[in-house]
Length: 472
Ligand code: SAM
Image (tube, rainbow, N blue to C red; front, side):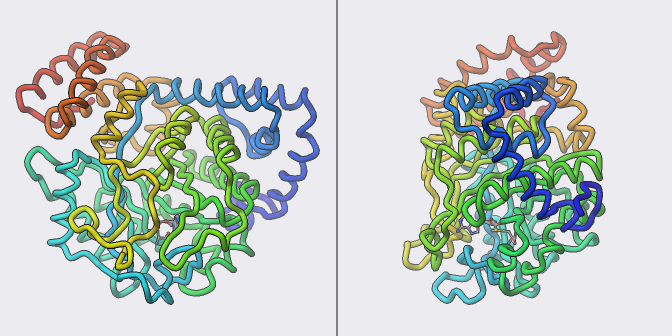
């Protein structure tokens, strides 16, 4: 039985509701009046239900698709301006006891090089990341009760926050580790994490069980209910996602929106972010073995309609996508991207050879962070290294309320400019610095509140004089 407020996985992700929604969307895709009414509702910038979003996804009429794209772009600008938040993944350990068939960490893979960073190695990785200019990380690890227990993750977070190398600092550590207990989520919260991220991989229970044949992750209910436990453990900001390519995109698109609806209905706040990874080639993983690959045009529609359906949620794209695909996706609603990423364990310090690698998957965007920042500036996006919200206690529903009523823009734009300025002073190439300074000069006058604008100008000149870490 479908019940968005239930905390039982098969009730808030109801297989029969997903199938009924797919049927509804197929039957009504030619109903122009209905499609127009959904687009009209979307224009209020208050989101759509999973049924309405599924209907839009079925529309392949060129004119409708173009309207969806332009609305997604408008919504993105309304809530996020042209700011793009920057981050990098940090892989701690690829030891794993699970059997996920699409992931090279799977326990039976004998060809991947297994590695777990020591605290000293973490220090070296973090210094390398700080020297690139990163301020925000996403921690990644396989699931292994003895090699990567929660104590190891907690100790690593403490190490990361403690490192102040030159002007560098990691100010927000997001964590992408396996589903765990309420008690462990509480410990992660107490360690000061930003967002807890966990991808569902697929919402289709039967397929999920086939793709996760062994290990703790094979328990569909435990995995699907993880965000409920995280919320119960006091983590305000959670990030969801599916791995597109494992299941038919229609099923997972609807399932993911139902998950967002469940969190909103049950805890009063939806997901902080949604990630949209697509399956990549990896050691011992051949994408040709998976028949649900999502083509680019459908993928762009998925991203645009998620933007319309959950307007307040940040959307993340990683270096799994090429520069060309990322450029398109930025126009359709993406608000966070990674740059200069390595998916190998220890990869920021040590180059690996392709045939002796600890990497999780092959990335498609190999540019350095400076190249990505310069490219964003050329495209008139503001690369932002801001981490202020959660450091100022603006998390969960407090953040969402400010975002929904537009007040957040008084913080976000000046914070983006201030953190971009820090980046330009400390890490940028001369060319990027010139472009960035010009953008700051041009956009400072867009800060709506006069008092905030004056203060931001003061902070920017203090950064020029060597001071750091200002925020609104
Ligand atoms: N071990 C943690 C868990 O069980 O959720 C998460 C960490 S894992 C390093 C992060 C994500 O990488 C997974 O959730 C999965 O979606 C993604 N991933 C695994 N194999 C992949 C592949 N071949 N291509 C792209 N992404 C992949």
